[in-house]
Image (cartoon, rainbow, N blue to C red; front, side, top):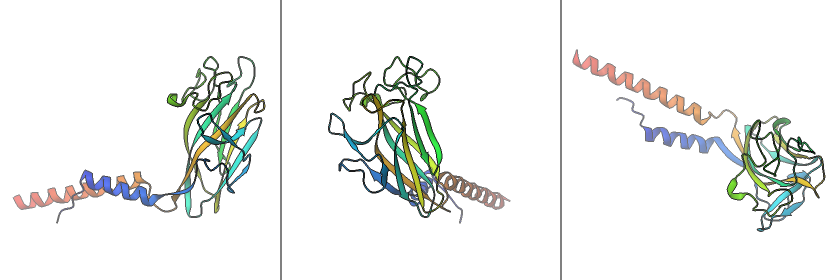
Length: 229
């Protein structure tokens, strides 16, 4: 019997592999009004004008640290919304700053970029020459109601980092050069997904299935040649 691997079979296998490969380890949108026991450091919950609650303020070096049980995972994927608020100065070439936001996963820095809200100021996030708000979700600009020196911006960010030991520690640093009354950051909609150790990534499954399909095709062609002989 020849082996045939169709596109539907590949897609189904990849879907199953992805489902088995990933598990949600932590999730919080802060709408409960509390940070929860997994978060230390800055644990205040701030409001947006539309009733959206978020973690902050992260300003003047303040940080929030999230500790997640990641036993059995080899890597984690972190996704969250970053809110840039008030008069963040970006690169600081116009007067003040620079104002950085930094994220570490297991001690490894995955983000350390400057952000500005005023569109006439420059920031490092988005590349050389990027202006305030570059890379943010335009449909959400100003949605939190923070208008001091430009509207607030929302960035949807995703990073992957290693797991060493049973827990993974994720830290959000608001490294602005002024306090919250003038500028700062907020974090929302945090989701941490773990990838189980020893389970092939979806891309690996894809290569394996393609290889099986090739072997099946070669076997089928060989039988046809023998039948014609």
